[in-house]
Length: 263
View: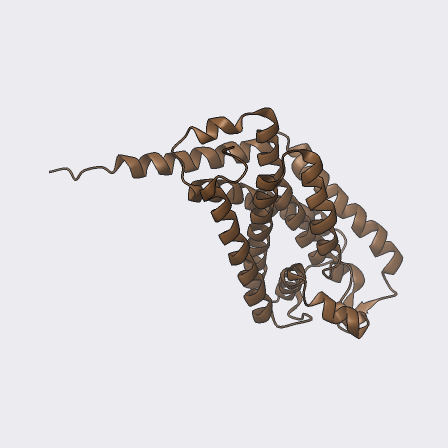
């Protein structure tokens, strides 16, 4: 006898995959803008800062400044683009009025979360790989602990994709999303050790940096390349992971209650 098929489970699974595919296609169809442009921006940062500081700064007593800078630029690009993907998608759907079609589906809040954050992770990783490939021309990479590279890349993109989801739920127009990005995301990414080691900062600012969760994501990611970092990678993993769990719980609660999408 053929066992009964759980049609509700199959429908939910198909719906989640469909929404994920739609979100991936949304950024892939304009890949020149969503993938190539961020890669070019990161390379310009590398050219400017590398040209100015190469030969003048030695990090960890052995690394050239360009080699030190590359992992930071890769992670910064992943974080910013993962955030932008989920945030812009939701805000665009609100403005165009197409969000109502998703509300008519039987998708759970878990399905929404998985699709939006999953697409954000994929875009972040694609941008990160693009930046890394282009920067191979400027410095020979090291892979002291490859597993840590993958762990922090995924965790960083998931964290920012989730924050982008929260921003997209909160914002009703692109101006509000830009406020969230320009006054929170951008300062926290730039002040997280992308362009410098925090040990080069005065003691007060070193302590301030330890309250920035983005610092731990970038520092742990950099550890994967060089086997050296400003703090233990295990501490970075614990803090970044805890931060992601907290924002994920908030995002899921907002989706479950239909915050600003069912009114």
